[in-house]
Amino acid sequence: MNKPAYRRIFIKKGREVPLLHGHPWVFSGALASADREIEPGEVVLALSSSGSPLALGFFNHGDIAFRLLTFDVSAIIDKDFWRRRIKNAFALRKKVIPPDTDAYRLVNAEGDKMPGFVVDRYGDCLALGIGTAGIERWREELVELLVGEIGVKMVYERSEGRSRKLEGLDDRIGPAFGLAPESMEILENGLRFEVDIQTGQKTGFFLDQRLSRELVGSLSSGASVLNCFSYTGAFSLYAARGGARRVVSVEASATANGIAEGNFRRNGLDTESHPIVKADCFEYLRQSTDEYDLIILDPPALAKSRKDIDRAARGYKEINLQAARRLAAGGLLATFSCSNHIDEELFGKIVLGAVRDAGKTAQVLFRTGAGPDHPVNLAHPEGRYLKGLFLCLTTP
Image 1 (spheres, rainbow, N blue to C red):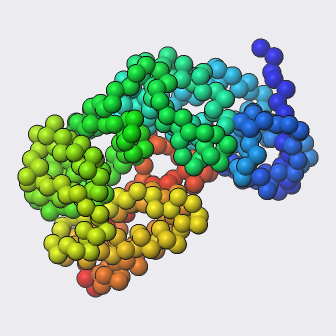
Image 2 (cartoon, rainbow, N blue to C red; image 1 turned 90 degrees about the horizontal axis):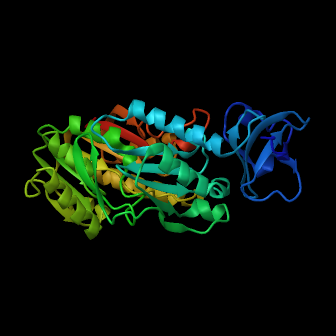
C-alpha cells in the first residue's frame, strides 16, 4: 500500500519541545502554519519550524490542534494500525487484571495511544466513548476490530459530554453492535455488582476505583464506616466483606440506592446491619452527630472546567471539613477528587485546610489513583484525573 500524502502543520520554534518529550498534545498557540483545508480529525504530519518531520497525529481547529498518534512518520494510519493498538491494549489488561474480575478499562485514550477513545469491558459487553473528531472518523472500523479481537457479543456507545462539543461533535448514545441489556452482572475481585451501561454514571460503574476499594476492604475490619456519594455501593460492599461492623451508605439517587441494596443481597450481605440512606451528603454530614472509624468521600467531579475551580475548591473543603469532624480519634479518611482541573497539589492543600479547620492533623497512609487498567502517559499528567488520599486523623 502506498503511503498517504498527509497534509502538514508546522510548529513554532521551541514549541515542539513538549511534543518531543512525549506530551501527546500540541495547542493551537504553538502552530506556526498549516496546509489549507485540513478537515477536523484528519491525520496530519507535524513538522518543526525548519521542516523536520516530528510525528503523525489528529488535527482539529480547537484549542488542542494536534493529538499525537505516533513518532514513526513513515507509518500508515489504517485499519491494521488500529488493530495493533487494540491488541496491545488487550495484552496489557491480561497482565494486570485479577482472574476473578471481568470488568475493567480496556482502552484508556492517550494512555493507550488512542486519543479520545475510551472502552470499558463488562463481561461480554463493551461500552465505548469517542471524544475526538479523529477517532470519530474511524468509528466503524474500531467497532469491528473490537468485536473481532476481543470476542464480545455487544458494544454500547456512550459518546457524550463536553469533549465532543469542543471537537464539534454531537452526542451519540445507543447500540453499536448487538443489543445491550438494560442491566448486567459483573464480577470484581469476587464481588458481584449490577451495572446499567445505558443510563448509569460514566459507563455504569466506577472501574477506576478498584485498587482503592481493595484498600478500603483491607482497612475495615471491626470498623464503623460511612460511605458518602456511595452510588451503587461498591466501596460499601468491600468494607462489609472486609469485616466492618457497620457500614452506612449515603447517596442522593434513589435508583442507585436500589441497585446498591440488590448488590448487598447478591453478595449475601445484610442491609439491616449496613443501612443505605437517601440523602444529600453535604447536608447529611452537617447534621450528623455520629462518629465513624472510616469515612469515604468519592464525590462526582465538582470542577467541569477551569472556571469552576474556585467553587469546586470550596465544595471539596466543606465536605472534607465535615467528614474530619465526624471521625473518631485516630480515624481514617479516604478522600478523592476526579476533577481534571483540580490537580494533586491543589487537592492536597484543600484537604489540609479542611483538616486543620477541624482542629486535627493528618498522616498520609496512601496516595492513590486509577488502577493499571487506566494507564497514563508519563509525559501527560493531565491524564491522571483521579486523585486519592488515605489519611489518619489525630488531634494535635
